[in-house]
Structure formats: structure tokens, C-alpha cells
Length: 311
Image (cartoon, rainbow, N blue to C red; front, top):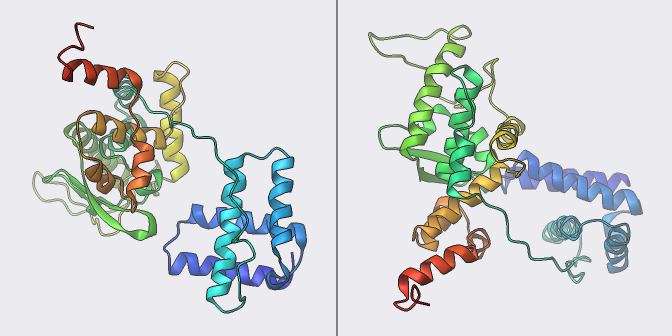
């Protein structure tokens, strides 16, 4: 890679982190995409033309890369050159006119109510790990949080008396989301287990009949050593328990997020409300989450149409 390219990529990533509040995962993705492009051409950004960008995209598709991956890489390249135009390093964005590969429209997977209940109830035992995993799964399904949002929660973000949680979403935007009764119950059990884990590593002041934590900036979900639970560990908790409860059907934290939105929509929730709960800036993004299967549509039709049951 050209030295100037590396310097400008570093500056761009710093801009994304400080000005846009990009997560570590997002920064790694941008960095990997840009390194792949400039490692191929080994030229300065000012020497890149429409031809290099087109050739990069064509080479990826020829090698059998997924269209979704190619589209993401091209989006990263576009954003980088847009930044360079903004910084007056370039006069025009050479990637602007390169079209994104057409994507196959896929309906994202979601769980039935029975499958969702089976998954969140699958951690067995009263030891720390199953109790914590149960609380994580219940919260994911109850509130539709992203995996990054769950891992960054602090104890102070959870309001047990009001049944609410304060979430820091993409771009560090905050929102308040309700937490269901079953999730709150699971979280209370987890907090007791959490206290036992932390008791040996942090001194606490207890008042009679009450346990108190120094909760400012203290992570809600922790591992056995008392450190913050990582995004990878949250994903692992979902995948491992899905393997036990769903009989071969795969699930991820995103599956539970989509399940949360789908079940709300099926229960009659307004799309705008779901948008706010999920933390989407655009309603069109929410619409991609909230599909209804044919069976449910037919059920609604039968109930609403006077002739439906007879037919």
C-alpha cells in the first residue's frame, strides 16, 4: 500500500470514530475494505480513477465474492473518497458513478413464538453462566437490542422500577426501550449471581437487607473474571443455546432482534413505534425487518373477512 493511502485511511477512520461515533466493528470493516482496494493498486488516492474502482468490483465478482460483500466494499470506498472531497484533497469522487451490484432480496429469518420461548428458556441451571445467558437472551428478545448495545450496557442504564433500559445505539444515539416482565425477572436473578461473582473482586458497602454497587460506568453483563461481556460472547450465548433448543435451525442476536420486531407487528404495533424501539433513523430500514409470513396474513384475513371462514 502507498504511504499516502495509509495516512489518509487512518485519518478517515479517526473521523468516523470521533465525528460519526462508529463502533470498533464498523471501523474494522472500513479498514479491511480500504486496505484490500489499495493493496491491489498500490497508488495514491489522487491517482485513482473510475477505471480502478470498476476493475476492483469486477475482479471481486469474477472471483465469486458475494454481491452483498462487494456492495459493502464499494460503499466503503465511496465513503472514503467522499471524505477526501470534503477535506478538499480531491475535487471529485471517482467511485460515485460505479453502480452497486444488484442484491438478491432475501427475507431475514425470524423465530416463531414457541421457538423464541424455547430459545430464551434453554439455559439450564442456577450457576452464573446459565443465569447470565438467560438474562441476555430474555433482554435481546424482550427489547430487540443489537448485540453491540447489549455488550455496552451499564448497570445504571437499567431501571427496574420503571421497566426501562437506556440504550446507546449507532452513532452513540441514546433511546429508552421498555423491558418485559420475564426479562426483568431474569435480570434480577442475574444481578444476584453477578453480585456473588463481584463480591470477591470489589469491596461494597451494604446496608441492612440491601446490596449496593458502585455502579457508575460498571458493565451490566460480565464474564466470570468480572470483565465486560464482549459482543463475541453474546453471539456465542445465542448460537450455543439455539443449537440446543431449535433442532438444527440457526439463530443469532440479529435473529432475536428481527423476531422482536416481527412479533410486535403481528400483534398490531404501529410501524413507527417499532422504528423508535429499534433505533432506526429511516422507516424504510424498519420495513425490511417487519415482514409477515403468509400463514399469519391468511389468519388475519380469515378473522377480518366475514366470508373468510366459510371459504
